[in-house]
Image (cartoon, rainbow, N blue to C red):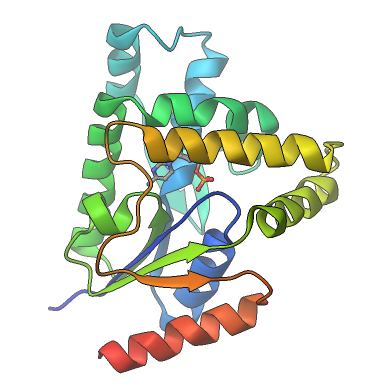
Length: 218
Ligand code: C5P
């Protein structure tokens, strides 16, 4: 059986997850938010007060960590942490954990195992370059820093967080810098990925562009 794999990569706030979720519904695919996996590990390490320099301890914890997706929610060791992993504290720390090669190795394996058994749409930073290099459909979404910060600002405001626009610009810029400059599997457009600049486009427009590209590739 030929399984479908769609890779969606791009910087923070480019609209990847909203768009991937909607395409998953339309095409009846499993949506895998790989950023949520890195966030969940970060949450566990912060909760346990583990130093990010303690490689041995992090490796031990990784071995004893269960990550599952149930109904588009992420479960960490059996507990739904979908809301908790979006907190600013996690935003501030996740890229440090995501830069550790042994953390990436473990999560990439998990992501590939899921794609081996399911029709998937996966979003992240290294899906097209590293996790699913043979995916038939690859997209790289971008948007201007102003637009991405505006989206994040609205999202945080709706959740009751009082962050200034400038603080958000700084957070996103820092995270993108760390994600693009890390040595292992940095944020990068795969050569064969289709680039879509979502600045000034609404979600439906971007979804329609992606769906029409998929029809053309078929
Ligand atoms: O997609 P999201 O913003 O939730 O991702 C959180 C962080 O997880 C990113 O800033 C990045 O450091 C890391 N990440 C990654 N590789 C992925 C997905 C996310 O390094 N495939």
